[in-house]
Image (cartoon, rainbow, N blue to C red; front, side, top):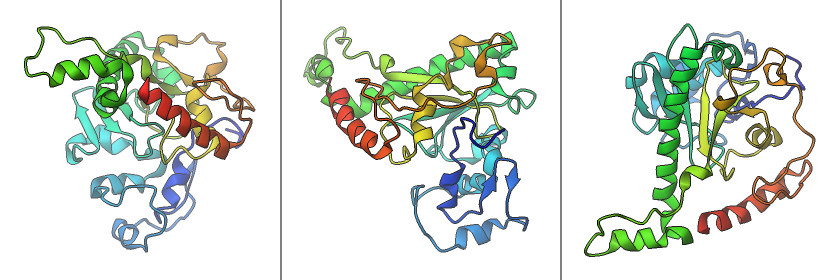
Length: 277
């Protein structure tokens, strides 16, 4: 893949933790990687929370293959990382969330989860399983948004008052439809080896939302919803080229060109209005 092709690349985040750099094709440093050595290296920048568990730190050593451990042995991770797992899927919190809530669905089938998603989703049975799991996880993200922000949302206040009443009504007011604030899909050119489906809130506000490709990978047709699969053989999303030149605010449509710092400041303002709707 040409280096200037559109890529949702989070691997650069790991370098700030002192973990050796990886290229898209494997480790740049040929020396054997010692987990203890990595963990004992002097701390520099901390894109990952200081209380990150040891099991998660170990996955970071494997670069592009870092998601594999969650599919093989999800029970070895704490619930701060793994939301739930079953025979077919593991659902985790994204280590570098690009929004207020950001989860990943990881299929556990080893015959499918190392395929490009465009190829894996040509299988109608596998695609149907992933769609069912996606619906479940979208509901979880919507519920988490309500838990985090419902008290601040104007359209949620009747529901909040009802829940705080001494005598609960027989039926709660519906409140805000947080499901409309959830987006999901796969990246056309994933940066990680194992197939993963992003499910996240649409606000695009978080510490790890730092770069132009981070933003464009969730706000353009580079994020392909599962409802679009299977793709036609000539669909450009099977062989995605380049990101668009400009970044547009997802909420108001304002064009920020390639000015990420200005966009981030604007997104913070939009976030406040979005939460309080």
